[in-house]
Image 1 (cartoon, rainbow, N blue to C red):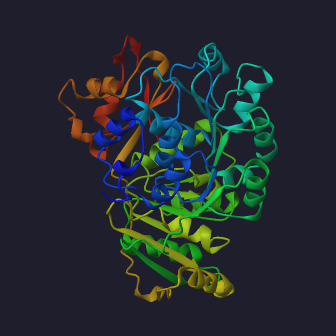
Image 2 (image 1 turned 30 degrees about the vertical axis):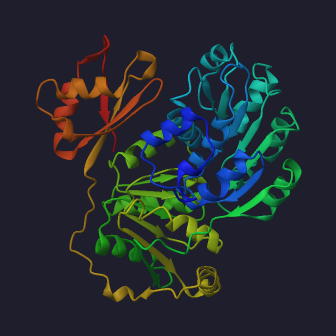
Image 3 (image 1 turned 45 degrees about the vertical axis):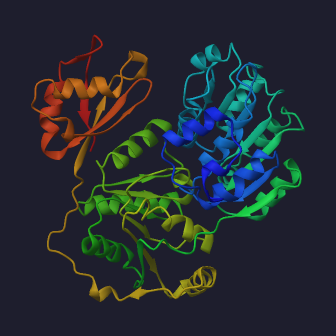
Amino acid sequence: MTLSSFDSLLLRNELKKKIATLNFDSMTPVQAQAIPHMLSGRDIIAQAVTGSGKTVAFAIGLLNKLEAQSYVTQVLVLCPTRELSEQVAAEIRRLAGAIANIKLLTLCGGKPMGPQLASLRRDPHIVVGTPGRILRHLEKETLRLGSVKTLVLDEADRMLDMGFQDDIMTIIKETPPARQSLLFSATYPKNIKELSRSIQKDPKDIRVKDSAVSLGVDEYFILIELGKSIDTLFNVLSHFRPESSIVFCNTKKKCQQLEKQLRERGLHARSLHGDLEQFERDQVLAQFTGKGSSILIATDLAARGLDIKELSAVINFELGRDPETHIHRIGRTGRAGSKGLAVSLFNKMDERKLGAIEEYTGSNLVTLEESILEVGKNFKLYPPMVTLFLNVGRKDKVRPGDIVGLLTASHQISGEQVGKITVFDKYAYVAVKQENAKDALAIFSGGKIKGREIKARRLS
């Protein structure tokens, strides 16, 4: 047994058995460094990027000491976005499956208050949510935090960037001073240190810095001519032809402009930025994660907290503000043993940023001449799937299996031709292969699920 084995941890039996069924081979660096201190009750401040295993780390820590027979809220997890809240809640539920009678509630904005108020008639053991909605429930006195033993701030740097600091401090004042406080952040700016000092007691400082790039990632830097950045980006996409890529820009205005420019060139691109309403954001993510769109253009803030698997490439249309941001961006590709690609465009004004990246990573950057990029004639990058919008959701008792069942019942479409299905309260998205889109729309037209007539449309 090694110290990186979950068997080496002093955990409650139910949790140990559950971990064994999930086939976790060994702990990630952040888990190996953080979990023992969490189990001892110590506060933690940890720097770790998305995909490092931090959610499993704090989930194990908080579940190990949860008292299922005590029907009060013992855990509060604050996240910057609804998407991250739902991902975190799903991971905690997965690990909590072996512990009987655990009630977990997700409280986020963008959802009606009524169902949340009904669920809060009995205090949940664990609450996961966004600061704005948590604060609203505190103001309405529908949420009680006086028994919280564990407080988790996930993606704390993003919450501060989004202006949640005052809300966070107001919420924390409602929790007991003797709580354990776990703070996770992808970057470590000055305001994170100040937040830690104000809410934590002698925290264990853990830094899990990616060693520049995963061995499975090919990283290149390309010098661009002034005014030619969109042409260079198009040539990069034509040369490498990634099935899915995130293109990072530094402002929401640039994201919007770039989406328009790429779509004018026949590429299926969608942008993700702070001006989108929650419905629009859900739609963009459903298209991209379901492979109904090939290119997602995003700011760092908008993309934080998104756990997008099987990402072929990360392209920096503009270099990030600092080396940590750069590493966080490119760390999204080349995961779980898959091959990844990272391409960064730069101009002569970026020399200082390039030097900082080299110093931070301790490696020499690989630069390419744009002239070596092979640009195909009439290049198009068609996504393999089409995303369909359905007017039914969880409130209609609809599950993904119901949607697959309707599509495959006539044998026109097989299960292998159906992709990712995302079901929200009042609507759902389903991905189908390009060649099956017309048949799928015909099946949905006039079809019923749970007695509810389906209306479907194709997202462009």
